[in-house]
Length: 104
Image 1 (tube, helix red, strand yellow):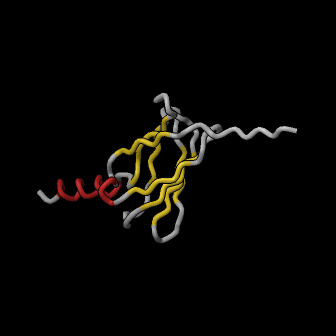
Image 2 (cartoon, helix red, strand yellow; image 1 turned 90 degrees about the vertical axis):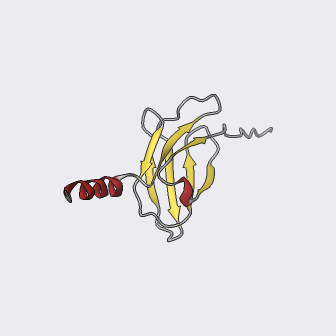
């Protein structure tokens, strides 16, 4: 009878603390995006999005987390994820990078 609670606890611990999908403004997924999660402790946890735009960051659960997303051709996006959003998939939409043109 005690085996089931132990197994459930094992699965609860193994779940990623932060997961979701990165998309562009049209809704298409962004593969190969860098997702950096920085908790208050300052330790950085890195993940890359897969071909389906999905990512998962395994890290200790500790307060709010600053999330920085970077991908070629897109502007860097920073957002804060609170404890209430942990364990749920989040959707991050990147905006196109601004093109700066020098006129000579």
